[in-house]
Length: 128
Image (cartoon, rainbow, N blue to C red; front, side, top):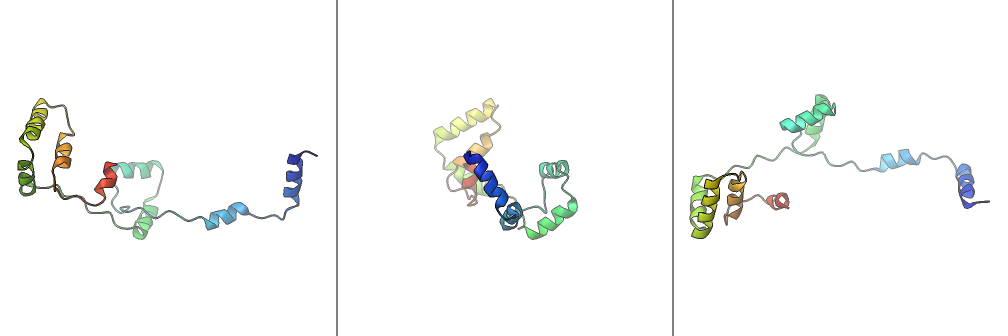
């Protein structure tokens, strides 16, 4: 008798169990993400597309942590001394690139280059 047939016969003789149901009951649910109480426009569009009801989102938002406060952009008081501390050659290069245009990410690049600019601890994870 081929090996495959023996396995089928053994399976047929085994007591009936609902292993899928047991696995489902033992599965650990992922944590509720933060900020379900304040969805962005793209998140709202996705929830609408997936037909996730507002009631379900409201209940999930109660179970999840609140969204982190939006990061405040540094002001002139914080930026002026940091920009002044940049080497002149670097400042000239940045100003030239700004004048030439075509680099929408230049402001973000400048902020990343500034030493001592306060950053949240999770910023490193966002930068990769």
